[in-house]
Image 1 (cartoon, helix red, strand yellow):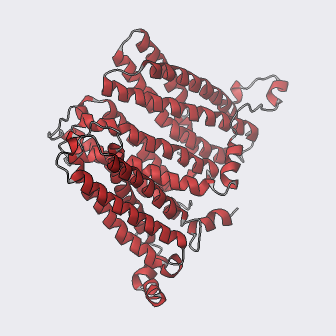
Image 2 (cartoon, chains in turn green, cyan):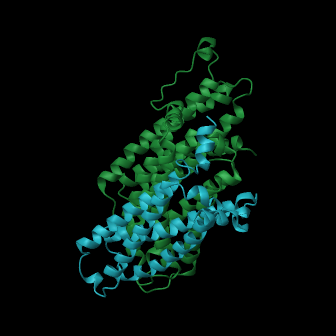
Image 3 (tube, rainbow over the protein chains, first blue to last red):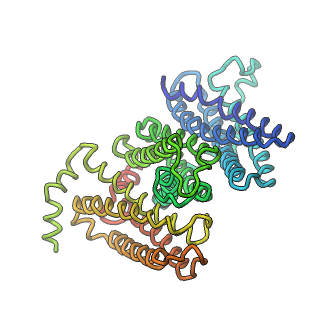
Length: 314
Length: 172
């Protein structure tokens, strides 16, 4: 199995996942069923997390395919540009879904405007992703391309408002973008890592005077740090994708991040950690999750810093 | 002074860090330095955010234990930082940016000890609002750490030692 194969496995997740998540969410809103709303928000967040490797493996797949006969470079570029906008909107939708999950725990209800925003942004993300998927399907599936010769040989119309190549030249040709993004990426690391330590060290037994419910309020600060690093990290990837796609530490870093997504749902939404009162010892299962969060974050930091030394990136 | 720097740079440890191809040599020390950054900046910034009014239900008193993690991170970075300095002592010491970074860290650590003295030595901290001067210190701490990180990161791109700039701008 190579990364192109992995892309084939993952590339159905964003469209199918968002269709399921969004329909379920609408049903939950109409029926005023909070449980369904929370489950569907969890689905939207999880799909947004899986959309990260789906996008990254897509770029790897295009590198594998680009020199093969019968592959349209133009079509691949149009697919990649469409996927970039769709990816950006899907991450925003996932972030909003996470915020709503957090609010359900924190206030026992999520703000109405936030829920409406999730519907609108998710629907937009789905529409863009469906378009990207349609273009992507045409790359390797002659059976879905029109038999009408004029239509089949017509030039690919690239309608994406954000072109990957434009963004790439901005990143590489503007001297300050890379160093500035590096500095911001490390500041984001500090913020996210600080909140991760605060929550998980408490669960493991430090600072027992604080209840988990109180610490739960610090979670959005950690998410701000993560959001900063997702944006700056994607700038590095889009700038010079070739140095990451076949980079073993990079792949491990993404594996750690995806697993941390599941871990975050657990600490944001589930009842077990929420019940850890001030002065109380956390149950063993919660401690295992906390220890795994710290280990996975150490993995993210270690593999991230090793990109230049184990994987040849800068 | 130059003799001392030269001696440092030619010591066995520095030579090993420069020349060993092992992943446990220079890359590991660099990874430790990043991890230490996470511990120091992570712990202080979370306390700063709390002092500035974020997640204000978290009681302050128990957070004092967080400072021991911060000092652990500081120890890791002092040791790994000296090693990274020794590796190229003569070049790094001629970089203004490096001394700016050192000054920012010294200032930031001074602010951290002030915060600890003004907030955590007060047994009644959780019974009254955070005083204005403490909030000012917390804001100063966030800005100083952000500046220190920026200076440290820019060392890779600007000035006499620029290992990463050489790769980026040299290859294009």
